[in-house]
Length: 149
Image 1 (tube, rainbow, N blue to C red):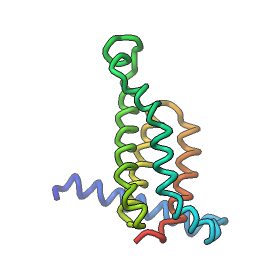
Image 2: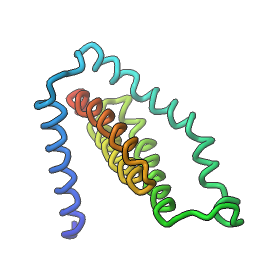
Image 3: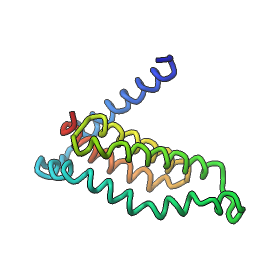
Image 4: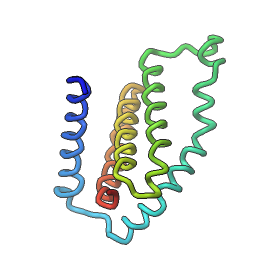
């Protein structure tokens, strides 16, 4: 590995450790174990459902007519936001098989997708929504982390 990829990997691990401290140890309220188990059981199906529900939206955003026929003019931040959102979608799709098997790698893919969603929300200007969704998702994600090995 070159130095840049090693630095990125170390930074992501440090961020993960920090978020785990706040969402698993310092937070005053925890999800009961029964609900965690239910979440872990239904997470793969919920993920698939969310992808299916969002397919029309994805095709609408990525249509050639919007980008190439000049019907709308998009800002650079919006285009970057869509790129990060597409990356997040790829990570979510990659996570699905391992979510059924409770693999830690799939949990990490969901974490990476959440980071890309966070960046996408920042770039699109939806800062309040981005923060609320990220905090909620990270809370749930880190509460169920120990179910993945």
